[in-house]
Length: 568
Ligand code: AMP
Image 1 (cartoon, rainbow, N blue to C red):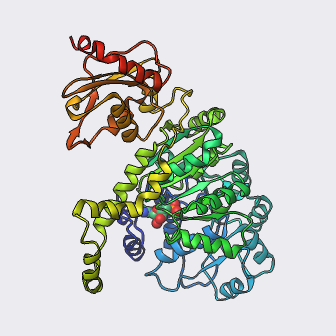
Image 2 (image 1 turned 90 degrees about the horizontal axis):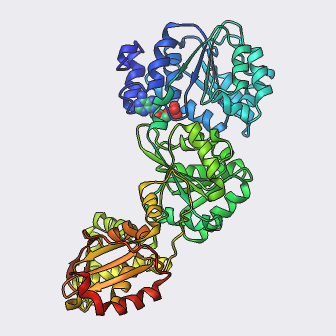
Image 3 (image 1 turned 60 degrees about the vertical axis):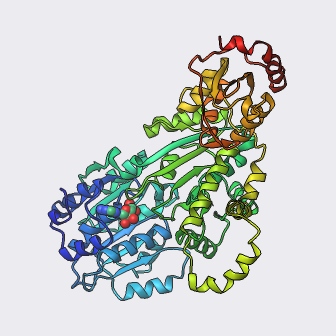
């Protein structure tokens, strides 16, 4: 099946979904739509959040609803208020061009009276949380004796949230003759039990590995000391100026603390956890959905109802104990065809937990090096320059102020003016990351990214670099060490032998920092010439590392005597 048209779904529904930008069915829709249109058998569908589940059951159900009857024909159970509202809104959007379709949304934590009024008007589809649905069934406000479809959405979550008794009771009061559809990301034994108990001879389908959520997610981890976790988080946020993501914490206390510290440090962040009232949670979620908030710090439970599709990142401030939780968290990014990144901050003792997650995930989680101060400054600077470049200028509004501004700044030439503007924005980063230490730790496992592997591999020696400046440009060993410090933004790279010639020089650095040096010396200038540093062809490694910079300097001082020999 390539298109929605081929499914035979009502053109009015197809018109509505194309307006939502759905061009072709997602893998789970390819499987469920023809099935639900043709068969009456119960169905268990394994699918992650974000794979297009709502339309997978919503479209075929809508197609079979009788708008002439006001009776409730489909009941959809979902774990949280937010998911119910989301599902309800989605189905309202799909049925935009259908006449007389009414959908009631019933969930706990809000007045039942309004919901009862909605039910009294008659609705063909009811979407609700198990507790409130059961309550309204008992109060005879919601009648499910005529339903043709019963959907259990995110069934595993409903069980995790403690809705087992309510689910049992609702399922027991539903009529025999109906089609039950159970959607779940995983298939724990309790779900199989529910399926066996309440579903007749059912089929099982899975969108498997193909789901877009899993495919488009990049999995990464950063290894540091536990005490540096918050600093690492800041570096990651600083090196992604346009991040729009969720930082997951294990406890409410952590959530509050991390959010408070981020806010104190000037980040556009807010906490979402169970200690907040429903109104406060709604407020925070709405701000986040509207992108007025860039970073949401949340517990798993509180974030459950949040359905946002274009997160750039999910950050695990701590890795969860249960790999299933990791999979759920990371499935919140990389949705609807977009790519996303799931980042875990870990220390050495959490490496085995990470391995476990990799096994369940069926994917490697790549190690990334914690960005250096210099790398972050570079990213921020480019982002700032980009923003300045793209800023729209309202000539008419700004014109009256310009003469006085030009006059005030007339003493600055073009270059200085640019420096002043950039510094006004950027000084806080420069001073924060001046002398910023390396937060990586290096004693780590085999699943590292190339960069970290290289660093480890080079542990035993120095790498020799060629650089295209020499004594003619007044380069001295001390000056060269200064350049290495400044360009890399690191203070603790061991420097070995330095050989300075008239127009070029050679220097050795701790081999673990090869890439940092190459990157740092790219596109930089020294006394008006473009500096280029490359690994020396006659790469020479001293067997042992010198113990420190002072020693290196002494060595380089000694250098002059035999520098010619080195180039013989
Ligand atoms: P869901 O799993 O239902 O929460 O859907 C995840 C996101 O994918 C939602 O934003 C849907 O609007 C979007 N979506 C669902 N089906 C399609 C489709 N066939 N093409 C493009 N986007 C879709």
